[in-house]
Amino acid sequence: MSRSLDALRFDNRFTRQLPSDPESTNQRRQVMGACYSRVLPQHTQQPVLVACAREVAELLDLTEATCASEQFLRVFSGNEVLAAMDPYAMCYGGHQFGHWAGQLGDGRAINLGETLNRDGQRWVLQLKGAGPTPYSRTADGLAVLRSSVREFLCSEAMHHLGVPTTRALSLVLTGDPVVRDMFYDGNPQAEPGAILCRVAPSFTRFGNFEIFAARQEWDVLQQLLDYTIRTDFPHLPEPGIDTYLMWFDEVCRRTAAMIVHWMRVGFVHGVMNTDNLSVLGLTIDYGPYGWLEDYDPDWTPNTTDAEGRRYRFGQQPQIGQWNLGQLARALAPIVGQVEPLQESLMRYSSLYNDGYNAMMVQKLGLGCFDPATDVDLINDLQSVLQLRETDMTIFFRALAEVSLGEIAPGGDEADARAPFEAAYYQTDPLTEAQRHDTLGWMRRYVDRVRRDGTPDDTRRQAMNAVNPKYVLRNYLAQLAIDKSAEGDHTMVEELLEVLRHPYDEQPGKEQFAQKRPEWARHRAGCSMLSCSS
Ligand code: AMP
Ligand code: MG
Image 1 (cartoon, rainbow, N blue to C red):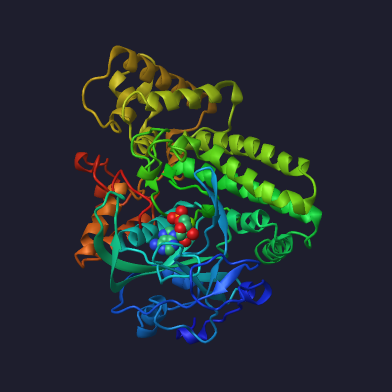
Image 2: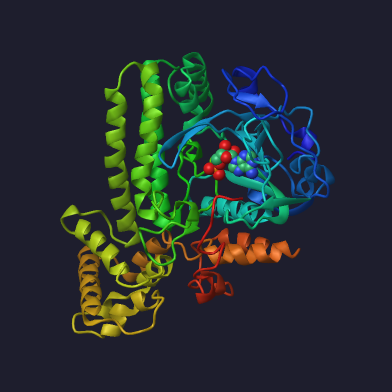
């Protein structure tokens, strides 16, 4: 374990091996023919450490004492750059809401450098909100407390849920106010500024490749591709046409697997633009994301997307494929053929569908997916869950509690309805038709479980290992933010602790597993979020 940050070992391969911006001024501009621009974090007035994730510190071989040190605060608030770091902002483009947006880039993210831990794992340290870069366009390069708390907690919550994600090491208040118009409605307000340190093997996005294709900078595109394969996909053969195709196929597979996880836990990313999709298949850029409360495939928390709902929960798998299509288009001129790329895109669909079915039967505690019965069982459950507002997370935990003996034919109807009743947001009685559909589904479910012959206890354990009890409910994050804004950061810590064990019953912590309270239904930050952060 390293005592001080000076003992961190850096190997800044990205800046060493890839073409850099020849200009060194930190002015907003189009950066041509380069993968990145060197840039330094800006000074912060009065940094205060809000939280630190010890598991991420451990990945970097940092002790708790190091994380509590003055130097740690200086480095992760942007006030000190270690001699072995080589800070830079990446150049990338992207399709935003279906349209090519040109150059975007790290407008408020600064990669400090790449560390190698004692196991030889490569981790990029990245400050988010540490000041402008050449890619900041018209914005300020800063971040506010509310969005930083949300990203800090959600990155770690997703990791503990078993969802591939970038990580968050630290969250710091800068002491500098940041002005934001939260809903773009002419009400700018000063908010506390904050800086997050994100950690990932790499932050390379689909858009990193798209920008060079759009500019026809084929040489740079190929250099980035070769670099990415050698650095982030070392199990693949040396770069060449066949390897490029294998790489694209792997990006497709990883993206499918990641989105299956999102659907499992009820996560809505909110801004699945191609600049927000990682080639490593990590969930990246937590902005106006949200957690499904009542099961509604059409829901998106992002008010900026309220009209078209492009990034709604139920459309995430298709958007994943659309985004992969854009990456394929960028690669096509380099690989010189389209068919194999198209095959990978087609395979994405079948992989996603197979993955989704396998995941759903796990959520239901069934042994193996049986297409003869389970396609209908899954589809009909989706309809039944939408008969009225039904909390998805609570429903699956309650379904695990059902004991088959009690739901014998002719048994008490209340037992059969219990998992649904536990999850309903309304209390008025079901209509006759709703009752019929709900009980009908339950009867088929019970028959299906009986066919497997799985004992209640075994099924319950298996279900509780994939159906979380604790997720980062939108209103919980907002409560933690409200307290933090008043200087009390204890709820951030407390939530992080609960979210470390999302599948466990945690006696005394049940208040974090409750339905969204009524006051939070339409409150900003709880159900409505914009891209302003
Ligand atoms: P997003 O869709 O939120 O990930 O952001 C899209 C682009 O806008 C990225 O290039 C970001 O770096 C940039 N961006 C977002 N917020 C800011 C900000 N406050 N200052 C500078 N750039 C920003
Ligand atoms: Mg982004």
